[in-house]
Image 1: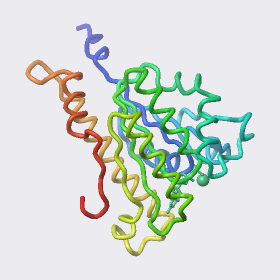
Image 2 (image 1 turned 90 degrees about the horizontal axis):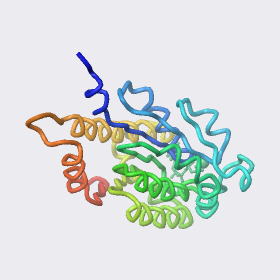
Image 3 (image 1 turned 180 degrees about the vertical axis):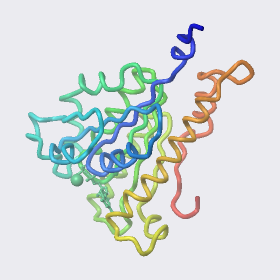
Length: 230
Ligand SMILES: Nc1nc2c(ncn2[C@@H]2O[C@H](COP(=O)(O)OP(=O)(O)O)[C@@H](O)[C@H]2O)c(=O)[nH]1
Ligand SMILES: [Mg+2]
């Protein structure tokens, strides 16, 4: 029996970690044995990339940062992404769904809307999953996060924001560093698995990918998980 039809029906789903926190969480999710996802890490920080064990790693903005990170400046993250737009375009080319994971607040997050824009342009359903800084974070950090959050709303089909403050409530005894990846990994892994399930539910009596895609877009339309009230 010729199985090409089934293979032809397979959707290309990519998960792209952006920046230090985003790459850390992507590294962890890559170890969760989720089938059918291609993992990417995008960063201006070469050291962070070395520590991220995923198949595809993209160092952006070397001319601008010499691989030393974005220094907390979202403008630098953005310029780095623009410098390597061709690499970003190739990373998203041919995708049906692109998840972008990023911890908002730092400079690398400036690259996230550029990645999202490229993914949308490539025709992918584009979902950003981000964390928001603790309430106790400095104004600079929070302003970075707010700016990029609104840019992501413009550039994605859906942006899901999880405030770091809920992490404190989620597991009081955990040290804050492990908490970040523990909770982010779990929340985002569930979201990916559920999206995958919806996409996979296609068949003769069930709507096709485009129908499901429309459903996901409608369901998730600009949704935000609002802290403990969710
Ligand atoms: N609690 C905690 N927060 C983190 C961690 N990594 C990243 N973050 C959060 O994410 C924000 C951005 O950090 P990062 O992703 O390293 O930014 P980058 O340096 O621009 O790549 C920080 O300001 C924190 O709010 C972590 O390991 N623990
Ligand atoms: Mg960092």
